[in-house]
Length: 270
Image (cartoon, rainbow, N blue to C red; front, side, top):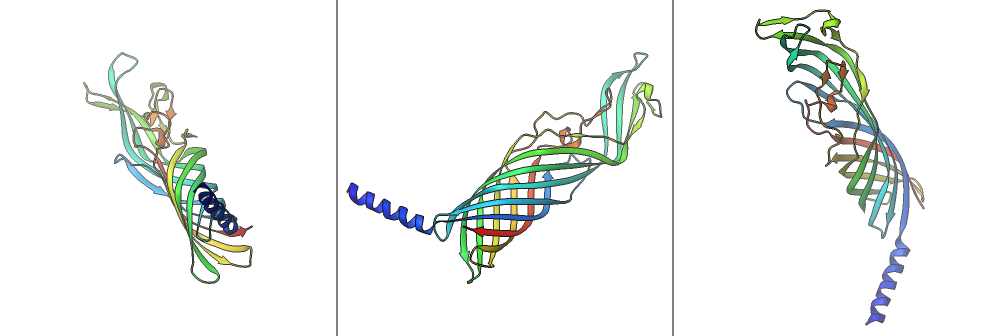
């Protein structure tokens, strides 16, 4: 019995080895690369076109089934326009009077940019559509690592005011020494942790010659885990004039990168 099992295993291994192929590809493209988060009814969010590049590797065990991995670089750009009132109660002025510190965000537009490295691990199944065209369906998991993430305000402003409840009086104006001022230019960096998500890629390959194919297709990615690394803060700290950035503030929930786009490139079989 052991001899029969060993013989079957050897035959299967040899047959699999005979039909194994390896492929490498380099693709470029882009799409709607978005940092997905929920607004707390305080602004309007928009996502812009983002660039993507992928170096892929596929190993096929037989003519139809294989596995895929590689390196994918994606650039995100998301913008948010804020119309919001932030309040800090029980502040004390120079005369020991209690007031509420108000920060008005007047159409302040913040743009968030991020560059992410994605490492996928996928199962691949391919279909032959004709003598020169194949359809590859790939799906699995990916790990994402933010290489660079920053933010910058582009237009609008924030204005600080004091509101005294006892007098029903709001004080404002250009008095920086008293914490009353208008600011508009802020920039900084976001600190994110790695994410785990799902990926699905349908690709069409057109045979150019025995070794080279034209590869074109789409990608769909969504992170199951959130990127946010630190506890959420106020959007603006008036004491130190620290603008923390929208993705680090209490105005949103968790941030989940989401990508939908296309790639076009060359595939090489060896």
